[in-house]
Image (cartoon, rainbow, N blue to C red; front, side, top):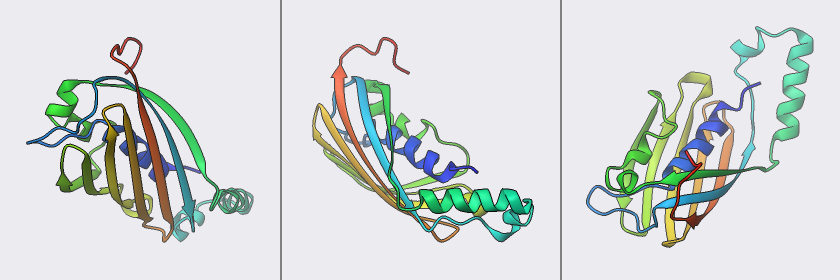
Length: 171
């Protein structure tokens, strides 16, 4: 079983930490950052055409795993580097993205970025409303709410903090 929409959301949340505006960059420090991302999905289902390809035993395992995960938060932590180029040139849009992701920026200021994002195709797609806030130059927050093409929902919250000016050892 793949949690690709959830993974795409987590990657997008990390990428959005470096979000900046073309005219105005998000007011955060460059350097090493750490973040914690918590995502909760509900209503996870697999498309019938995918379930039909599984043996009855595989199908039972997949459905049990999806049911057990539904409504349960999943938390992960990440370390990464934010450069001035990331902020100035909106390169955050390319981090972790693939050709199946599209974004429409609704508004940008030095303290807030709001956008709509869609990733995936068919049974593995998700549409998200994302808000990133620079709480201070050393602290970020992000919330994202989305709908999976299979009818489920996803809610993601991220909290990021600046660790230091050196990105040594951070990607």
